[in-house]
Length: 173
Image (cartoon, rainbow, N blue to C red):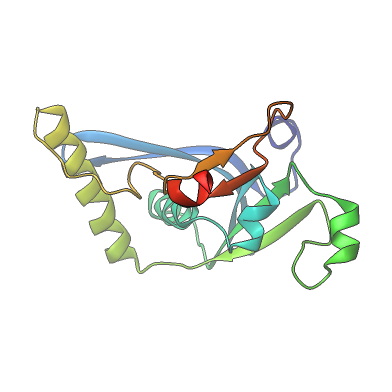
């Protein structure tokens, strides 16, 4: 993001913070880059596995919310630019059909209808307001970014897991 903040391409809007009032709360977001050809892009430093598994659901929500906040801009396309922190040239050569061939990749993000995005935002704010007032909100596993439990088997001299299993019985075996 430091590179984005210090560079500028003619006609683009970079690192723009937009805000909207929702049920008395100010909701704001800062998108990375809007291009004059009506493309909104967000840059992510991420693992290659994010690319292999098709991106993250929260990226879709995030970019659609940015689109809603930036209602005065024409936006016809949403994209995530993934910068891979763990990219390997060896893996790229070994698996050209599955592994990204460069240290970065662009992924299209599904655009939600604006009315759906507005309802999504209002529902999220309502849930947070209810929780802040002391209400018990049944947050889902996805809301908490929870991952399924796993069991790591380690060798005494290894720093990392030798193998990871989905259940304790397999790990003990």
